[in-house]
Image 1 (cartoon, rainbow, N blue to C red):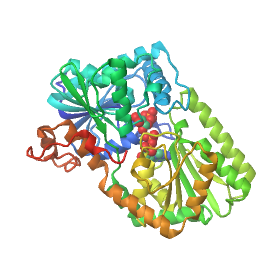
Image 2 (tube, rainbow, N blue to C red):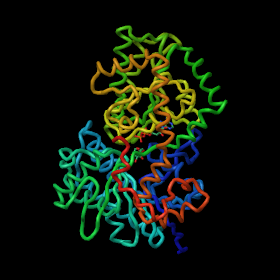
Image 3 (spheres, protein in one colour):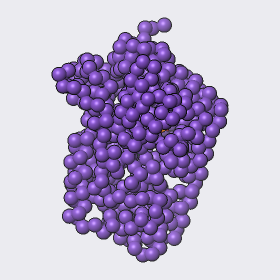
Image 4 (tube, helix red, strand yellow):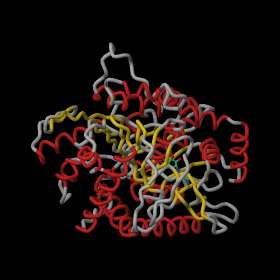
Length: 501
Ligand code: ADP
Ligand code: G6P
């Protein structure tokens, strides 16, 4: 067997940054994986001597992948049973709904839990093989909550971080989980457990006290002879990269063309979501439909572009959601559209970054109204793309982003009347008000970008800074992201990283 190459930084996530998909001509091709986790980490790690451990999409054997932008890909194979029981089952039909306020009913099956343990063990073993002695391992998200504990048992020499991209629920909800103690213990295998919001760290500390009877504050937890630190680290985007893309003349030209193709309406409303019941798409459509019915919004004047990329398509709740959304879009277009003038332009295709940037530039109102969202990077991408300083962001109070961008037009998406009023307020706001809000949000995101996120998390994980400075001395993107202050400067405690949350 060839000797395994090892890295001093290993990122472990259920998904690799690319996955295989079938092109229209039937050929297999690789494309960027969906979702915010990959969107955040991929630009960050580019040209960093790191290894990314994950699943490449599809069932069966693990394909050997070439490096992607200088990052080594280490594939973990998942069988059909693993996909059904670990990915679709425990991850996306138990944990995902439970962590998002149980807006859909979480399901519990013992077979799913067995698969969750088995797959987490496989990820831990794969990581143990590729991590250099004394290296840093950064485990991501809810699919892999047992990995920190399993990995510590295999490789106590490693510095282990865990970051949860989704909300961490209040105790009343988490307590429903039959295997709650094991999940908490798994996360406590890490040296640092990071959340999007301070409230999530607080929920975690409360649960650890209640379920495991361990001494816990919102910053530190004592377990065995170790201290596990916890804190909030709101994830972000590559603000400068999105701004530079949106500023390109061809993107601006594409935005003008899109507006023409949309019939030169006075106002364009845009929503871009993974097709997920947490995103509040149905509630938004209902609000829009009622505004059309009451005449507050008129089709010739205003157009809604709804991008809804299909997601987790084998999970029953997602299939039902898609059917309901498509029926509703059809109804609204049938009732309110005209020939050549639909009320909603509905698109389910993946777009490249330039096309997304052009869409953001054409949107007078960006409607981001999830029922619950760990962060929501689409909202941040929109703000970054508005290099012209215009554009109104309508944002749900229940997105992590709302704690960071209070200048958005905030709405409660569960309140239909409030949602309608918010949409009207954003559509009718004065350019001065819109511009002031956008300026404040852009200034915030300029400072709080993906590199700032990595810097705050990794410097908290690696207090001494030795490992991270070694990584940062290479010529990569992580350079500047992760460089840790000289030892004379005390490392900040995780709790100081809270950004409003
Ligand atoms: P989630 O992580 O729940 O999917 P986020 O809003 O945090 O939600 O992240 C979604 C990411 O997916 C963003 O980076 C967004 O640009 C990207 N995205 C969403 N829809 C599409 C699409 N149709 N084509 C390409 N990228 C998309
Ligand atoms: C969210 C999750 C990610 C996940 C992404 C896409 O962002 O936090 O972990 O990768 O959604 O979902 P999928 O099921 O396609 O990986």
